[in-house]
Image (tube, rainbow, N blue to C red):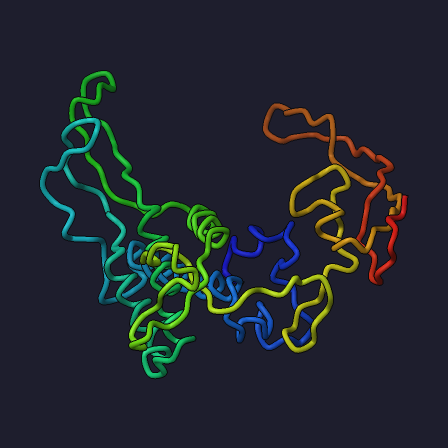
Length: 287
């Protein structure tokens, strides 16, 4: 599982869960051409870029190092600075991911391959979009009269959040008449951009377990009774209703810092009502 990816879907009907002994962490569902598959391919591609680029900066790859193109003086919104430090070599990471991840799809060149290539590229762009500038100030009494800066990737969680937003706005597409590209199914929509996620077929509702796709359904999932979002009992349970179970929750509380140097906490116990989606399909909620 790519770090940070599943957490973005933990409150959704599709939360990356699979049947035991599924052939991958995302289940056989990735064989379909839905927006969920689009996210899986993009996040995997982004993960390779992020991991390889970070390894370059640590000196863990023999033929890769810091980005040597970042040199001399430059200017941003805060004024002039000098490139220094070790800028992440995003170019190397991107090139490696393109060669490694795209190889199989370039041999196929059918509709699904075009979809996967597009989403792989969107994943790589997601990492690049999250690049940021880090600087160190030099001057008398901490005055920032001279700055030395380097370019670094954000945490992978930031990239995952960016791709999750693209997933929420993913575009349904089909192959162009000439078979060389993708066009929106809704002709009133604009052409998909390189950073958009695209898919070829609508998603199932994910309410029920499906052995063909490896999805476990939402039965037994904990829901939020007071939420009107994806994690709410009405939405997550697909109208089947929920069971309420009273459970004793143990937490750390009344924590105090003790000199020196540890935190001392008490253990607090609270009875709480937790709600779980029904496995079957009753017509009424359990109140």
